Length: 225
Image (cartoon, rainbow, N blue to C red; front, side, top):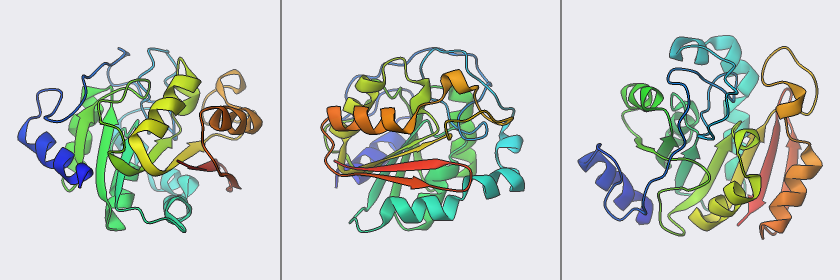
């Protein structure tokens, strides 16, 4: 299984690109800053769109409730035979941990070494690697599921990020995003993605079925790879 080989290789070499991986390419950003899911995700875009705080803030009870982790994971896995997941923009590894609890082999990638170190400490059962969503350091079809948690809106090239997601995922891609409305929490409206744009770009990227789920405070798109 490619995902398991990838995890074993990563655990054997924390210094950079792992055996069997494609070349790594990451965009720089401010260390320690956080963005995405209430400050959870790091997309690796070079854009200065950081809205959160430290690791402790990312895992506060009220934020976990807002994210509806259990519901999101359930919808991502519903009707699909997924045994492995790549959590892109993993941040502190919150969603990687949630998928791991459901029995999936979990790998997270992020551009922030600070966040990767925190994720490795908090989620020892998963593997974590440096990587940006516009150029993922993995071979084609390496994972059953690819999860983009509140990170696609930070892509410098949405089409390229979706193309990479489709390349690396065997079964499906799931995109969790902020709703397109003004809110105190999260990015400003100008940085959010209209749901119709997500659907349009996903279809142009070659995805078949596109499902949209409106959660209490989030939107989830599940794309058939």
